[in-house]
Image (cartoon, rainbow, N blue to C red; front, side, top):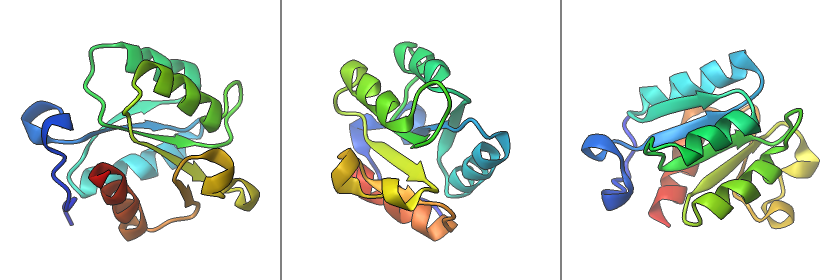
Length: 131
């Protein structure tokens, strides 16, 4: 089940899309990474907002940021704001298990509610990469 979107010039090595997955829960991060790699995307992992910012500042090609909303130290929304300061065009997907935070209008970010299925994740990624 490969991603249907070919992002063109925004993709990293060989046209493969690289997603930075940020989640403080290792099991949740591993599950997201497995789903993303199963649909043909390359992944990087960060276990905190601080670690994610270090990767965003590096020379690593990153085409999309997927972050948990509720993390200690730095929320996903706070990370998104700082990431946009570094990379204004970076697509960002906020993933949340908290219904009250899943409102895109409140955060200004596309949101995916937990739990989600691989098809839902792929649709959200495809929508973001089409923009």
